[in-house]
Length: 229
Image (tube, rainbow, N blue to C red):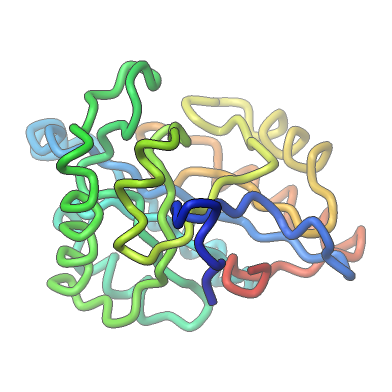
């Protein structure tokens, strides 16, 4: 499922299911890797997090993974395994993880004329990795977008997916603080943004082991973004 185009035919933006009738929450994980980080990966930096994926499977938590095309190229076996697991769904986080606006956390910027191609290049990378059915959802790198970006992506037919709960896991080392921030922010229909990269979010897997049982104790049911939409 996708949302209808926004005003003027712009790419629609989804943040949370504001009219959720039950206690559902979507955990989403950004599998980030920028186009120029190949040398760092070759030197041993890990942009994947197999233990986190294993924990989601062990706890039977559905999730949506927003993957960059560059990540899928670096870890094709993991990308394929995630994409073929019915517990998960894979969505687009751009190919390059370059920003779609100026002044977005210091990220390089994709020119407006190349934005659509960057998104389509990511979908092509997914297909090469063996992900047959990625979802038509897109998450802007850094969460940064403007009218120009929404116009540039309209022809791709994607729904832009943001979030209403920031986990604070990026570069965090205190798993308890990450878990608390999620637990304090979640409400019915929430979309939580987290990360699936060991080097950039080392505490996320540990935080999951705290927040998942607690949210279930509170009566929450975990769903993929597609169910909220």
